[in-house]
Amino acid sequence: MTASQRIRRNVELSREGFRRFEAADMDGLIALYGKDAEIWHPEGWPEPGPTVGRRAIKRQFETVRQEWTDGHLIVDEIEGRGDWVVARVRWQARGGESGAHVEVRWSAATRFDGELIAEVRYFWSHEDALAAAGWPTR
Image (cartoon, rainbow, N blue to C red; front, side):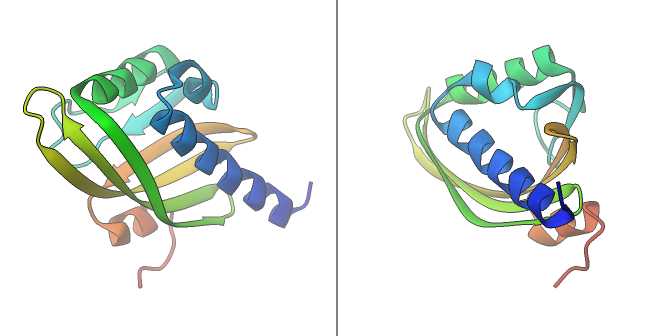
């Protein structure tokens, strides 16, 4: 596989992860992660993180899905370079308890090891996600 094919595959796998999260397909989503994958939460997240391993990551995603209903995930921008994919995302949902409509924006820097996600670093700032991937900020 060429470098450009690997990058396209990683971008598509990232998109598929977002689709599976939105569809609440947690088993399908977690299948995209390596056994020892890590998720680094954005600053101020209730759990300090990192969340390590498929089981813990699945629980984290299930918790988010339970606390927010009627969720719609929008990928505004996604780009791959090397083993990294950086995406700018919006999550439109309703608070499970409050019923309030919200839109949360964040960016994710995702590193692949082969065909599996090795780590995801979430940030409120897109520039921070770019920097985490080792890319120049705009």
